[in-house]
Each structure stands twice: as structure tokens, then as C-alpha cells.
Image 1 (cartoon, rainbow over the protein chains, first blue to last red):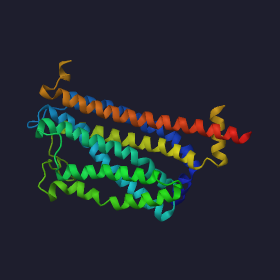
Image 2 (image 1 turned 90 degrees about the horizontal axis):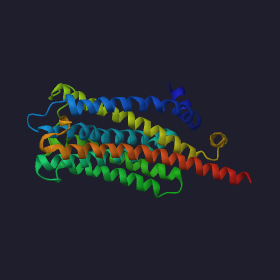
Image 3 (image 1 turned 135 degrees about the vertical axis):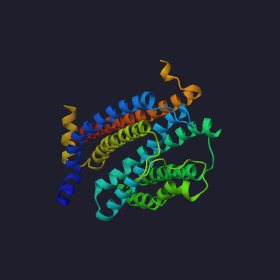
Image 4 (image 1 turned 180 degrees about the vertical axis):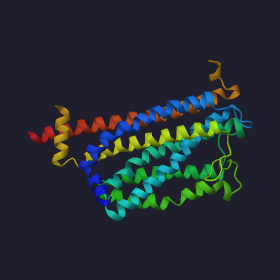
Length: 246
Length: 51
């Protein structure tokens, strides 16, 4: 297993293998998105309390889950990069950051759009909202810090430390509704209980998995680009680029 | 088309889905554009080095 990981993690092998995987991630993303939209708009019923506005949740909740998931992936990849000096792990962390920031912004904005008709305000300095906003700042700080260095190795090391330290915000976001008296509703899904109508749950899961496949495809596409930039002095990159031009 | 109208929340719901679509589109297009730019820049660099 370790040998396979090492072989796949070599930039050249990664570039060649990942190119074949991307269509296999994009296809389920498109299929799940279309079925998910149908479920969200047509199959899923209105909520007995929130009414039709519950449909915003099918975008907001998966986006919020992605914001946490991507940050965890980024921090783990940063840790692997620091400990085992695997270049590809640093690349995965770097290319994940803009995608994570985009999903965090989407979660915040759709939450705000839902909050206006439900809470009567676009924004409240609530524990869940504030900690999610801090997550967005962490993503932006990671991107800024990485761009501040000319040397990619120094940039990787500095930003990895920030990603790992920022991991402390993840349990704060998750448990904020329990730890503080929050305006934000608690979780409707846990490992033991699902307290929502089944079609609502299916709609949530479909969009959630669609976003996961999209993230996988985007990370591979962006990582391939980063590999080309970092390995531009290698012979194999020259062969590929000259080959593309023919 | 009536099923696409959601009571008094129509604007909020469509705004959310349009934002989600825009986010996905921007992420995808920017990724493709960056890759295209990288290929072009590297090709120019290799051509220049060859001379």
C-alpha cells in the first residue's frame, strides 16, 4: 500500500493517472447534481415550520459540510507534507484552499439568504455564523500566506503550520450550537438519528455527494496544473507540453 | 411552471441556487483557464530556451 502511495505520489505518475480519473469524478457530479435538483425542487415537500424556504437548506447545508471537510483535508495534507515531505500532499493542501474558501462563502451567503425571511435579518453575530466566518478568514489567510513567499518550499511549510493550527476552529464550528446559546438550529442528522423527512434527507445527500465529486475533480485538475508549474524544469513536463502543441 | 414558484420565498430560493451555480461555474472555468494559461506560458518558455 505504502509503495503504491509513493508511486502514485510521484509528480509524473500523478499527472498521468489523475488525468484519467477526472472524467470519472465529473460524470457522477453532473448526474447527482441533476437528480439532486429534481429531488430538491420537485420531490421534497415543504417543511411544516420553515415552509418552502427549507429548499435553501439543500444548498446551504452541503456547502457548509464541504467547508469543514475541505479544511480537514487541507490540514491533514499539510501534516503529511510536513512529516513525510511528500510534495503532492502540499500541492493538495494548496489547491484545496480556494475551493474551500468558495464553499465557505457559499455557505455564509446562502445562510444569510435563508436568515432574512426566517430570522428577519441577513446577519447575526451568532456563535455558528461567526466561527464559520473565521473559517473563511483562515482560508484567505492560508492563500495570502502561501502567495507571500517566492520559494514554494518555504510557502508550503509556513502555510501548513497555519492550516494545522486553524484546525482548532473545526470542533468550535461543529459544537458551537451546543456550547453557546445559538440562534442557529441544531443538527438534524447524527450517527444515530435522522430527524427529518426521508425525501429531505435524500435531497441533502444527493447534493452533498455531488459537491464531494466536484471537489475531487477540481483538486485533481488544479493539482495537475500546480505539478506542471513546480516541475517545469523536468524533462517529462517539457515532453508533455511540446506534445500538446503538436 | 407553477411548481417553480415557492410561495413568498421564490426570490430567496432561486437566489441561493443561482449563487451555487455561479460558484460551481466560476470554480470550474477558473481552473480550466489557469491550466490553459500554464500550458501557453510553458510552451513559450520552452520555445525561447530552444533558440
